[in-house]
Length: 268
Image (tube, rainbow, N blue to C red):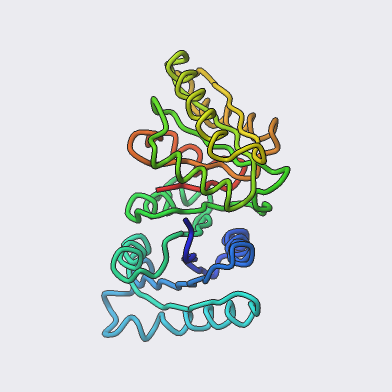
């Protein structure tokens, strides 16, 4: 399900956790890693005054890519240098260049900057339609003893979402906890029961599949609070959002991508 990782690099230290996570993923899953430095002269306010802005901004990118490549000896790294708005460039790289099928993203901005300018990670997820890991803090990969938490608030998990969740469990060798957040308790219970039974049947006895319902609405960030409580209670290492059809709402994606206490994997 994951074939090639695409890591947008940046000199910011805020990306260290995402960078380390991408290398751990590449080693564990034996995947190639594309490291992309995307220069955006427009953000400096100087781009319009330069005849060739790439000549001014590419040297920094080249140094960053060389530094990163030199620090890695056991992962196949392909460095790429591009220019433009990060979300649009990444969308082109994925759709047109086939540069990767799985993004690994970190927080490009501080919380204060994000408050005034919005989340760049969310803009990327809106424009780039592929799997993505969003990593804000150091965390080991899921595996035996470290389950993945599949969170959704739609009426059911579509078949394609079920297939991807099954593949993820097999890929990491991890147990699954399914969490439904929504108003329809009875409908959610039926959907969860069907999903759990189907996943148990497909995965067999080697995998432990359980579920939780958190009926909630009305208070801001209660989705996030319920998710983080489940993370703590179950020892979760990865939050999974199957963003397929109507399984995950835009509001839930927004809350968890920004502030879940574990890395978030968006499946598409």
